Length: 235
Image (cartoon, rainbow, N blue to C red; front, side, top):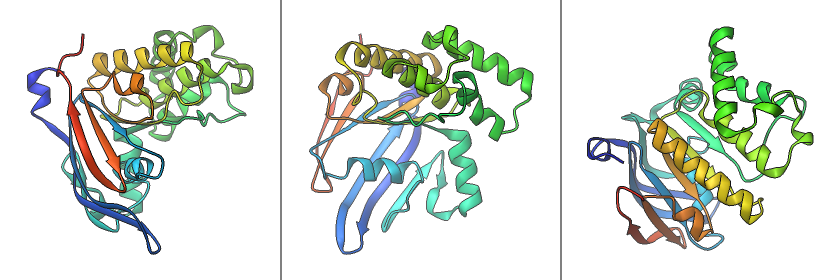
């Protein structure tokens, strides 16, 4: 992460609280994510990691506090504006891939561009380039059911990046993979983040996954317990 990027704030959360009914899940979380920075959210199950990720991505709204992405207050956007912001500025990678089963690999990756109205020629070019980059060009016509777990996650990464978001949110992206495929996916996420300057917030229980990040934030009982900052330039 270059110094010029590290000084630019992309995502800001201030005193964020969230509760489901009377059960408090987050109790005053504040954090900043800079352009091109990778941040790991770690902590035991039930600590609030996935809830925080959903709030940062505008999937849910905080009970209290404020979240800004690219200077835009998420709580101030109506449903349509929030959906457009998420569609243009955020990519998501899930533990269980969430590929559409009736679409081919290429069609799954192309879908975000279709939703944005990108012309068909540009869609094909961008999809082909990303499929080649993640190493699944030869599987472009396959259905998800015909892929291995590692292939499905690489397709999901391509789908998350094809619309060139500023931020990728990843929820246990290696949690459903064996160690070999997990290492390959982590290397790919790190390389693509570096190549594109895309920031990433990654929920994980894995020390290997946290190891690709510039900073690790450890949550416990809905609050930030510790932060570990690594070198801004990883080897």
